[in-house]
Length: 295
Ligand SMILES: [Zn+2]
Image (tube, rainbow, N blue to C red; front, side, top):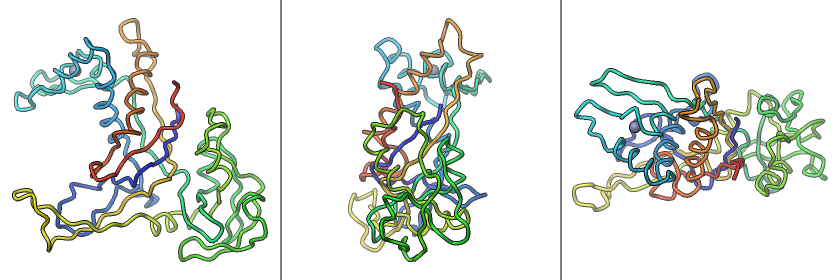
């Protein structure tokens, strides 16, 4: 199953324990492409926690007891509750572990919002569009491609500091089969897509990330530490991200059916919209709406 998510807030998934007072808290990137990514382990971990809120009473009680186990006892997960059965578990003392019945893959940026002289556009590449099941033709040379309606009379646009030629794309669209044709966010992005050359895409994304400066709080006194400003980067709001979730059908049975696993996963993903994920989500960070959940 391929999910599409739209960021409501800036999203910061730190590349490794950010410390207050340290300047430059970077986000996780794919080492091959240098593009920011959303690690599958982060999606899975947050989904696991949020799914507990959505369980019915008996299952929820077992899952909360499991989540409250003291890691000092070297017994992390119970292995018996519905959350362990879905997402997997590891128990140190009993030397038992089990991978989950569901696997989450890394989320990638599909369409990245940039302000331009013709209004907001969402930048993507031909290979991304084709990989997610949409359609896109690559530009020849250093040009941008867009749909006819978006181009109108413009033959050049700016993307941040870049000023580039704009031509009509033969094919440019998000996948049709995900049943989002009536979704307003999806429609708007689809109408305002711009295809960039492959080599330029990481540059466009990385130079248009949200960078903010904040004041460090001294946890002992609760006061702002006036000398300790720190900066951090984030994927901006209005970014379209996709990630794959695969359910291991062969390990689903009468005890836990595939429909049940799917329902639990989707119930967790549903709360990304209100509770968010990533670091600093108490500061208006990290909320994202998964667009194609079955309801
Ligand atoms: Zn458990």
